[in-house]
Length: 134
Image 1 (cartoon, rainbow, N blue to C red):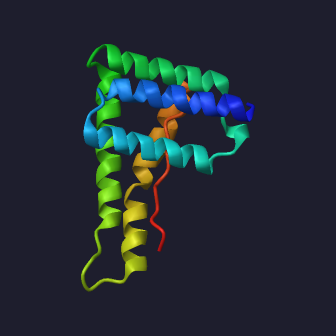
Image 2 (cartoon, rainbow, N blue to C red):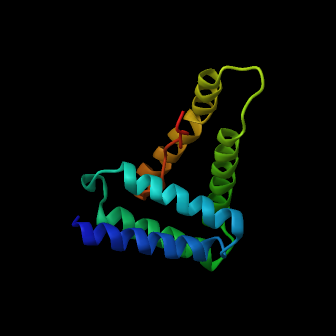
């Protein structure tokens, strides 16, 4: 994809994601942060127009009714929000590198499940752990 196509893909995903979460406050910021992280870390070769179109359809279905797509998206955003919140907390009496490693490995199974969902539905939900700058 071209740079302009990637920018348009980001905007479409963000717009449909906001509609899917009904512009609720913690969810829209978490969605924004995850999309930014995915587009900043990803290479242009990672973005497929078919996968992005399927993801937009997924978000449209999440917007239209509170079915399975809406529940999946809502739960993912809750987990991502708690994950980011855990990284913001400073543990008392523990080494920060150990705490960061624990917080990262806890979400390995979730990221694997998101990758399998992406593969089976041919969509592109971000399946990565956001790490703090330590």
